[in-house]
Amino acid sequence: MFLRVICCAGIYACLVLPVWAETSPQSGETPSPARADKFDGLAPFVERVWAESPAVRKAHAALEAARARAEGADRPLHNPQLELDAEQTGVNTTSLGLTQTIDWSDKRGALTRIAGQETLAAEAGLRGVRQRIAIETLEALVRYSTAREMLALAQRSSRLMEEFVAAVKQRREAGDVAALDVTLAEVAYSEALMEQAASEGELIAAEAALQAVSGLTLAQWPALPEEPAPPAQADMTLLDSLPELEIVRHRMEAARARIELARKRAKIDPTIGIRAGREESDELLGLSIGIPLFVRNNYQAGIRAASHQASAEEQAYRDARRRAAARLEGALGRFSSTSRAWEAWKATGQQALQRQRELLEQMWQARELTATDFLIQAKQNIDTQATASRLRNQVWQAAVAWLEASGQIERWLGLAERNQNTNTNPGETEK
Image 1: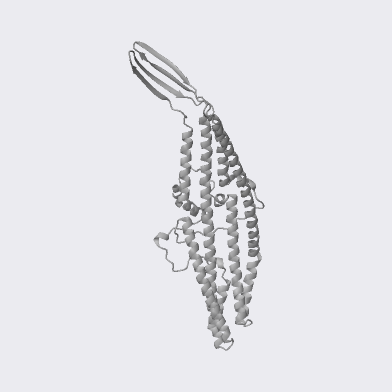
Image 2: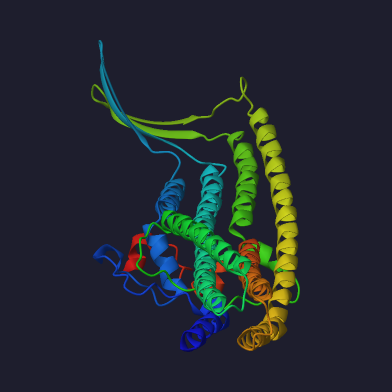
């Protein structure tokens, strides 16, 4: 009798414990020194991922290169030229001259504007890489968290079936159940063990993917915070801050500036020179001016090419913005739908599942259920919990998709203001 009570209590405990409450590391697991890092929140974890990311470092190097090109573009376009002339004939002549080509049409200004737009595109590229890395990390963390929940549920199911086998065997000895019920319980236990093994494999794969994305190996990965709440409607002004759209927009502005540069190249840059010297006992002083003649190349083809390229970049921007708007609308619709389902589950489904657990345990102890009926009800209860875990995973996937489509991942993490200054080297975020 005492063993029967213990078995029933174990079965009830396995049913009642919610799956998301059993996500701590298994007891007895001692992390190695190389896996001792822990993070109290998601934001510090993402910052560390940025610091370790070669892609972020590459984008930062590209930004520094663009800034160096912008600095060079703002320098004078032509350097002065020093000329020394010596002639020895019947009359000895020596002169020293200095010539300077003048940027008469301000090509330097056009080059500076092009380089400025390219620098802004590189800054947007750095933000885009950061956001992409943060999104990939969050997606991997969601997958890992879901795999942990599913493994915890599979372990609970295995314990439940193990206790169920013991209880059925106890009743079989008392002559209360048939031999087929014992066999059915043992088959269910074997199935639960196989599902647990599959869940363990999924967790290993999810953790490997998280390690690959983050570049870190941790003893304890950060927990997911509360899911972000979807907005009432899509805010299309968010598209203006999307890094991928900023990159295309700055490329379009740079292409427009190249039209201006092509037109300026079709204008003359005169060269003025001054020369002083001596011819025997006479002093020499001369002034020269050189004007290029655009008779073999008038640079009109370059102007047409720049104009067509600017038109192509403008159409690329319009196409990218249209696609981004559709992606934002679709992501918000999916996010809102899954969030409503999740909120409904938390409001009513959890309570109903809890009542089912209690009634199931009471009826089993009162012998009002056969072993087969109890097994069917218990598996249905566990399957419902698994469905709830998968729904939570879908909510997170939809949330991540919306954060990516709206460009709000850094703001949601609380890192937007901290990363406004793009002069910071990625490696310095560790300090």
